[in-house]
Image (tube, rainbow, N blue to C red; front, top):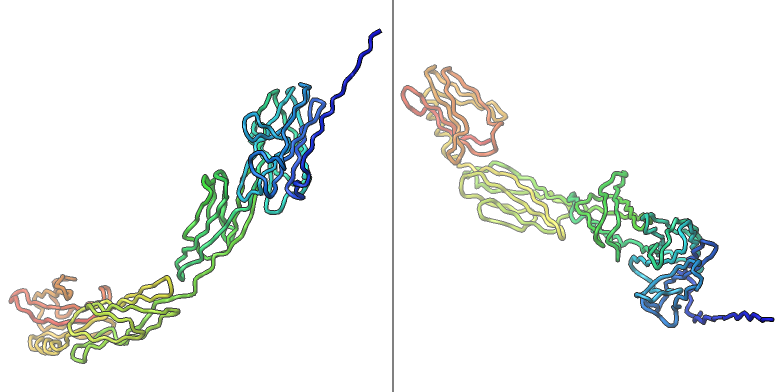
Length: 413
């Protein structure tokens, strides 16, 4: 009679349990073909991505070829049953490997041994289909897996909150707000920006850690970020800059040299702290309500640059300086030639002549450029300056038969 002796070998694993954190610990249990296997991933203060003797445990595989296996790996031929990782401040994906003995359906049960902290979200990605599964507490998913040995089957995705920053509008009505969205450790995510009315301002995939949106109007913005099948929503406000205006009035926009041609300005700017005035003749001022005297006839552009901290606004207005000494003489001489000019108001004028002979009336700018020129044969002609630019003009009326100038006069528009 033969006696069969069955020997049982027991292997004991001792893992330093004092290193177990009370947070961020996940167990993955792979079940199928009548068997189960598990692996643990956790984030722990003091752990590294390498093997940590105090925190990690090597993977031992069953000698039974019918048993599936699930595990992580830190290097070739370095498989872990317990993989302790640092407490990440950026997105991270850890590959989960498996040995699948028979093609078929397998379940993976995800259990939060200790809860995931609110600064993290987690998901699984099926590498065969690129389908994402966001994990909310204990979860079970079913996958159809082909027979394979030592193959990557899942990504365990650790998602950290996006960093959103802004720059408020720098200057009133500039609409130059800026939003920046950063996903540390991630160069494959999507971002959508909506304004306060729900209108999509920007939408698309991002292939960098940071994307910046500029030229945004002051408003409340909703930011939708998506990656690893995880959706995040944040809100932020771009504030308006304090109202800021560059404005001024001219006490008189037509100055006569005979009266001193002194320009007086009333500054109506709002929330300005400094000023620069350019009077158009090479002279400038930084005063609040400056005055200036002109000594030559001409058309001058008055330019104001008002400053408020890091921004500025500009405004220009025009003043006409007239040498009025010749005006009465020209008109008196015209009356002796049988021609008269009558001002009708609102920059409208009428030319009256005694003769109906052919005459040419011409209007010139102060630089000598012909503004208009026409022939008339009646004893009157009416015209308006309102359609032309503001400035100083010279009007002439010439008799065509005698080639004689009947009228030459300056007009201010």
